[in-house]
Image (cartoon, rainbow, N blue to C red; front, side, top):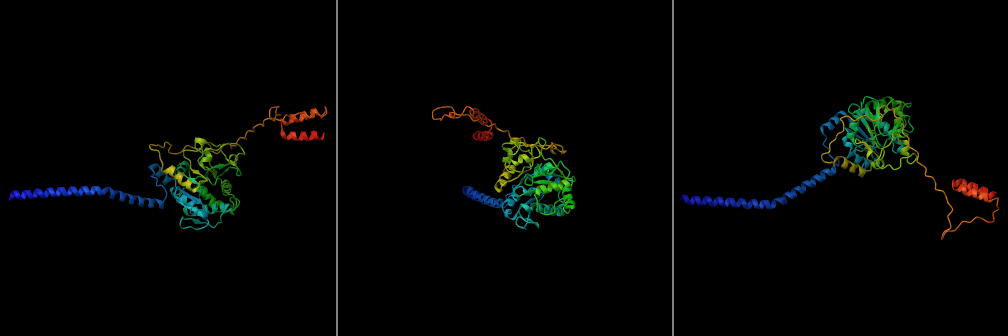
Length: 403
C-alpha cells in the first residue's frame, strides 16, 4: 500500500514539473510579442506628450540652479497678433521658459499664448510706445520678484543661462543696461533692439518713476525708433550703456544670425551699414562669438528649434565647462575706449587702356594722314590723357574737336 502511494506521488510530481515547463515555454514564446506591443504603445504615448510641449527639459546642475535663484530675469518679448502662433510660439517652446518670468507683449489679449494686450497700435511706428508701456507694466507688477529685465523680439534667440552668468558679475542696484552697442545718433551709443537688451532694477526704476512722465527726459508719444529712443532716455537718466564683450573682445549680443557674424565678408566702411554703426571692433570666424554668447537676431521659427536642439540636446560626452564662476570683466568696463571706425575700402587702380597692335583678326588703328602737322601733338596729348583718366579724356577730346 505504501509503495503504491509513493508511486502515485512521484507520478503527480513529474506531471506538475512537465506542466510547468510547458507553460513556461509557451509564455516565453508569446512574451516578446507582448513586450514589443507594450513598448510601442508607450512610445506612441510619449510621442503624443512631447508633441504638446517642444521645450527640451534641461537638467541644471547646482551652479546653474544657484544662478537661477540669485539672478532672477524677467524676459518680455515684443510680438504682434500675426506672430502669436508662429514666432512667439517658437520662443515659448524653446528658450522662453528658461527665464524666471516670461511675458509676451502685444496689442491684443491672447489667452492661448498668452499675451499682455497693451494700449498701443502695431507697426514700426508703434514700437517705442509698446516698449514704454511694457516696461511700465513689468515694473508695476514684478519689481519685487525679479532682478533684471530683458527685452527681446519674437525672432531673437536667447541663451538665458549665459545671460544670467554674464549679469552675475554686476550689481542690479546700479543704473546699468546691456546689449549690442552702436555708436551712431546717441552720444554714449545705443543698443540694438533686435539683439535684445537687459536693464538693471535701478535702470527700470528710473525709467518708470522719473522718465516715463517727463517728456524732457523720455519721449512720451509712441513714435520714433524704439532702441534709439530708449538710449536717449537712458542717457538722460544717467544709466550707463555697458560693454558686453568678453575679456577677449568677442561679442555676446548679436543683431544678426550666426552666419553673418562668422562669415562677415569685407569689413570696410560703406560696404555694409553695420560696419559704419558698430561701437567696438568686430571679430569673425571661430573668434566671432564669445563662449558665453547670449543672443542672435533674425532667427526664423524653424531655426529657433534647431538652435535649441544643438545648444540643449546634442552634448559631446565628457565636455567640461572651465569658465570661472564669475565672468572676467569686458575690455571697456570703465567705458573709456574710443569708438571703432571701419577702414576705407582700398581702391583698385584702373588698368591703362592700350591701343591694340596689328594681329590677325584685329583692326589696326592708323593715324589720320590728312591731319595737319600742328594738330598731331594735340591728338597725341588726348591719347596720353586717356591712359590716366577716362573722364578727362572726354573733356580733352571735345576740346580737340573744337580746335
